[in-house]
Length: 385
Image (cartoon, rainbow, N blue to C red):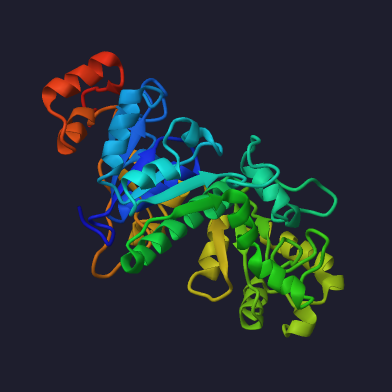
């Protein structure tokens, strides 16, 4: 293994959404991630599911005593456990934090949920849109006279969930260096989503953010921070917030609103007419024509690209942000480290593709493995890659 997390063993209880993405990032950065699949779950093994890349699969029936015993023995060799069940599920299996930390006091037990381990909603169902709904984040998006938009789940599940889970895990691992003890990381999407709104709370606190949606600089209210349709049907994204960038934008659009200082730029009463003028001007040319005009400028203008188009953008290609492995388009490794860079691991494996290999590593002989497979506690399949 290579990368800054080389030598860290993570055991991932297979799930959906933020847990797998978090474990993909940990694997990209060099952690050894062993994915515990449930036989026949359909959660793993598809070559196109890039969030399952870079880890080996051990398939266990955790409802069986033997399956649980195998997991406990594996956890004795691990640094981190990641699970994403509702509160209480792992405890009912006899695999809660108290059980696991008893066998490995240095274990960092990462729990990924929508609502958290405690609170009035903790044991109810929910999804990304619900978690960001109660955080105030969703209510801050969109136009004032329409329902808030339905954003991709990157804001809640991945931003408020996965990334905060990883931060908690890395913080606990760092603290363990001095204490020698593991601990539980309670990562909730609703918590992380609320934290992501901190900058907007700050703007609101200094009276630079109004309560009404679509009336502020960063929520589509400002004419210089919007997406506009070109003649060809494509779109440009404008982000010219600072006065010097706004001045370049207006110059290249050949528009004059009577000044480019902040007193004019932030005059909300004039925003509707300015937005209409910018929209009309951008509609006069194609996206390619405008990109040629804005090329090399600081006007903060880019194309709005589809996921397939983004693969071909020169900057994404230079940064290797989007790459193909075995014909599958996927994201590159981020962030970049100078001395111990991460790398993309192997493609997703079939459920149980490394069951026998992993069991041998933790001390099971072939006779015992055969018995576990025969009993249904362990499932094995040939590695798919």
